[in-house]
Amino acid sequence: MKFPYLRHPVILGAVLLTALNDHLLKSLFHNFITGKLSDFTGLFFFPVFLYALLDLKKNPKSSHEKINIKRLAWCVLYTDILFILIKFTGVRLLLMSVLPVQIVNDPSDVLAITVNIATVAYAYRFRDEDSFI
Image (cartoon, rainbow, N blue to C red; front, side, top):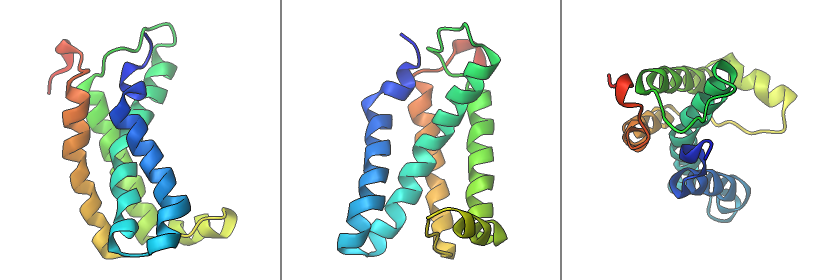
């Protein structure tokens, strides 16, 4: 079974909640919770998705059933850096000029990075025993 960590209900739920929040809940409720929800859910699942993409590129014939925790930690770091660049630099303005997205500059969004603990805890159940940090 390829990529069981991507097909797990926790990841699928995070992706679904992100989409639901961005396309429905924000317009219905427009409050603090809906403003932060996509940041938390996106930062939760994106490093796992990025890990899967990089693992597929590195090992196309692998079964992709296990997660190397060290490599996932790098994916978390890259995701956090990208998040900070998009949220707090001119990258946000560039993206908004070329894509139909709205990105709010809110310093409290950085709190969402705390979800990294949950991402690593989730990935730990799929860890490659030889990759412990």
